[in-house]
Amino acid sequence: MTYPIPETDPVLVRDEVPSDKHVQPPALWRWLSQRDWRGFALPLAVLALWWAVTRFGLANTQVLAPPEAVLVEGLHQIFNGGFVWDLLASVSRDLAGFTLGGLAGFALGTLLGTSRLAELLVAPSFNAVKQIALFAWIPMISVWFGMGEPAKVVFIALAAFYPVAINTFEGIRSVNRDYAEVARVYGFGRLQLWRRVILPAASPQIFTGLHLALIYAWLATIGAEYFLKSGYGVGNSMIDGREHFNMGSVLFGLVVVGSIGALLNQFAVRLEHRALKWRNRAA
Amino acid sequence: MSLTETLPVPALAAPAATPRLAQALAGLRSRVWRGALALILPLAVLALWHAATLNGWVAQQILPAPALVWTTLLDLWHSGELWTNLAISLTRVAWGFSAALVIGLALGVAMGLSKTAEAYLYPSFKAISEVPVLGWIPLLIMLVGIGEAMKILVIAKAAAVPITINTQQGIRNIPQPYLEVARVYRFNPRQLWLKVIFPSTLPSLFNGFRYGLTNAWLSLVTVELLASSEGIGYQMVWGRQLFQLDVVMACMLVIGLVGLAIDLFLQITETRLLRWRRAAF
Image (tube, rainbow over all chains, first blue to last red; front, side, top):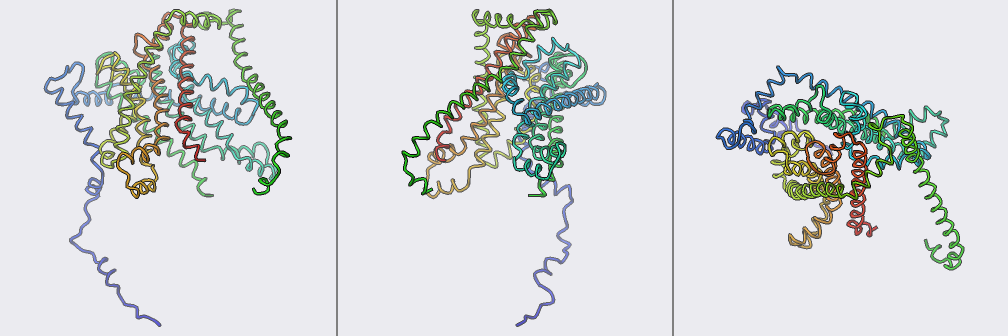
């Protein structure tokens, strides 16, 4: 039994008729109206309060600068001040320390992960030393390496070293024994075993370690610049700002520190996603 | 299953006794062996350190002798200096952490329960937490001065962030069926909180406390190094300024030990608190 197929589906037709009355709103408007703006209420309230307090002289403007002064100072720093140099100095020092500490951490993590004897020998000491708060190393580092660039890089490297070492170790340890056995069955050489089995299997955790290291390294960069005051850097400019009661400079630095941290974080997330994409293919 | 159950028990138990003893002995031996191996590296470092200072390979100003560090530690201990400073530091941590508990729990519960509260608060929270504690210190010094309030605020911020996040996540992740069962049983709000919400968020809450307390201790050390006139961190700065590195190293040791103690304390509390969960399996 066959049904006569209607030539046009009335429902479909009604939907597809282009109606002049329903013009699409402009993209900007759509974007504006779809966003959740409620999150801005609190910051705006704080900003208004801040402005009112400084405007009507409820607080000493020597100490609490008015918002517009902070904005002016920020713009001044970006266009006329040494902001670019500070930022460049901080970021390059951050990356130098991250690279050094990451490599050292990867080496130690690999050693401990592959050799039981090395683990028994080193891991307890490593865990004990790890208990010392990172910043407690600053006084000793300043004696051993001075106040200049080497000391800062060493400190940043130390901050990046721990998470990479721990996560590399755990990543390698958690590689399934079966994988290694399959590799043995296929007669993989040592290098092949590493390249094709162990590193790929351990890579998610190694990336976690690198991600953490990136965050800690940035934190350590700012810290190193606070404590080892010499040269340029975002941290230096903030400390200087505080000493000269320049709140604009301090607030601007705060925003920069937060933004760079967020950017590094985003970068790590993207990189991790890309590098680990192959894992989803099999699953 | 049934086969092992029907086996005569004594026949199994009697020969099992000696292997068990042997096993225990073997376990003990491997433990001693492990301990001995673990000590090799520290002892080697200590020996090298001792030799280096004894033979003048490095100047005393750069690396004090291990024996000197030890006597300094004992001196600080006996003179009470260490205790006074440690007490000041720990009081700060306690205040900061308590403030963080109140703020973090309130924020976390509000944002976990209500989507509206989350919409209003979360972006600001996120922005504040995105800037590390270290970035806030200069601003806080300008706003509230260099005194106790600044230190407690810094510690509170450091601890409140993980507490808030974990509380919110914990509440969000309560399995929907639990709430449905509670509704079926017509739990009143008090029962709902005590029997459903609190127990099922406890592991996550504890995670938050754990990170919070660790963060609090770390940021205390930082803030005391940066701006303080008492406390264990200050003692270290003072030692550094006078080039008394034995004091610095003794303080590092104490800081490490306190960190370890906090870690152990948290581990023990966690197993205690969450014991009921394990009993189920």
